[in-house]
Length: 113
Length: 119
Image (cartoon, rainbow over all chains, first blue to last red; front, side, top):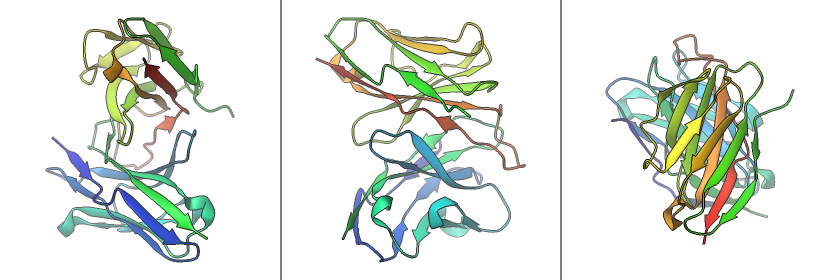
């Protein structure tokens, strides 16, 4: 069965500093990979996704993620964090020709002024 | 256009009560999913509909959970004889795609969720 691990439960970062959130997956083949953000009281919003091709993908709100097959990782990055980026971030996978998402446990990001 | 909506947004139930949670997907979306998100955890799949057909209910935790989508649009998740462990946020998502394909256009659109508290 596929699984997703987000090793960091909480991350605190200063406004303007860079941010990197880790995601590792376990699956027999390369699944399709997603990052979602969840703000308090809001639904999950898709930041970016990777299906194939260029391993560095750009998303909304200035986020990017890099797929590394050798490490089974799909880490999310942002060069300069804004206070509005405080939220919970979820990595998710879906297998090819599948449709249900398998989520990691999430990383809560706190932004210090 | 309108996104996925869910109602009620908050529900408090006494243990043993039945509850019904509603999801209005984006118009025309073929696929509809229910997920359960316990406090401090990621969402977990409950069930999937393609139009009115419930094709996957492997994630439903017990036979107290029942979902329907009779006309292929609005869906209702019903929980009978609620227990404290049912306390969670229930998320609904819809998608115009049936499966994820190499074309890369697969996406699920999530509603704001219903927070269920069982006392």
